[in-house]
Amino acid sequence: MNPSPDHRNERIDLAAAFRWFARLNMHESVANHLSMAVSPDGSRFLINPRGRHFSRICAGDLLALNAQDRDTLDRPDAPDKTAWYLHAHLHARLPAARCIMHLHPPYATALACLDDTSMYPIDMNTMRFFGRVALDDQFSGMALTDAEGERVAQIMAGDKTVLLMANHGVLVIGPTVAAAFDEFYYFERAAQTLLICYATGKKLKVVADDIAALTARQWRDYSQLAIDHLDNIKAILDIEEPSYRT
Ligand SMILES: [Zn+2]
Image (cartoon, protein in one colour):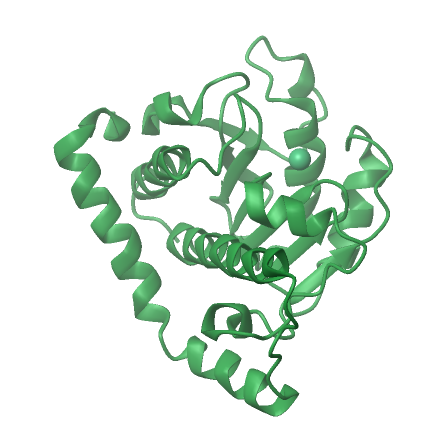
């Protein structure tokens, strides 16, 4: 699957995503996590080390974990507990979800805190997510048990790319770092537009389902955009903060 034994390309892409999420203010303190599977069954994956600010993360800092290793949380460099319970279960149960990103970005998290969390199709960005958002409506504290990770994995089964976690935040999955990063970026933009519309107090102009579904399908023909998006971000980081590759 990967010609590089240390998964160099995945590490660099993931480090670039961490750095850029920090620039976009989509990070939160030193919490939240991004991971990338590096074995076909998803049991081995890369994830950020505990307590490291996204803006300082380098490719070489990423932990290489094994979802089958029950002693992981006893390691001196153990990952954050919530990261372990959520990502280990999701990678093991959803091997197609190569990249898993969990954040509490301002607008998408605000949407997750409304009684009606629907991403109404009102512009092209919101229409991108028509039929692609799963809702976890059962917030029950921080995800600190195996059962919680398994429960979330079941909700994400199917063709959904976004999990809106009520009273909590968002989780996005994708086949590559570039795809998941781009999906998260656009979901936050879509939530921003929706909440700005709500703030006007005016009625939303929601398009018909068939138009929203068509637009969502049309977005899928633009998969090159995600690759170009991350390539451009890496080109900027190569000039402004090249340490992300180390
Ligand atoms: Zn969270």
